[in-house]
Length: 44
Image 1 (cartoon, rainbow, N blue to C red):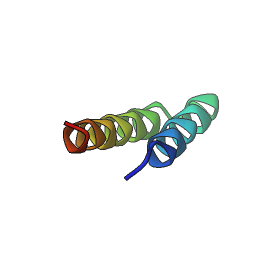
Image 2 (cartoon, rainbow, N blue to C red):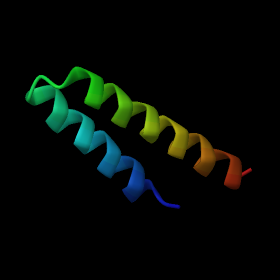
Image 3 (tube, helix red, strand yellow):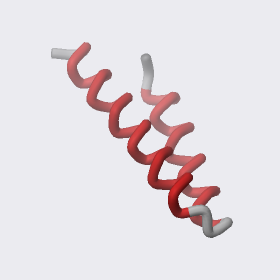
């Protein structure tokens, strides 16, 4: 798992927000947060 995956999810959220797809953006942000938490736990 790397930061690239998290960045991809956040970019996806950004695109959804531009298109007005707020629920899709929220889901992408949640996935990014989950991946960040997984990465943080691996680095402990």
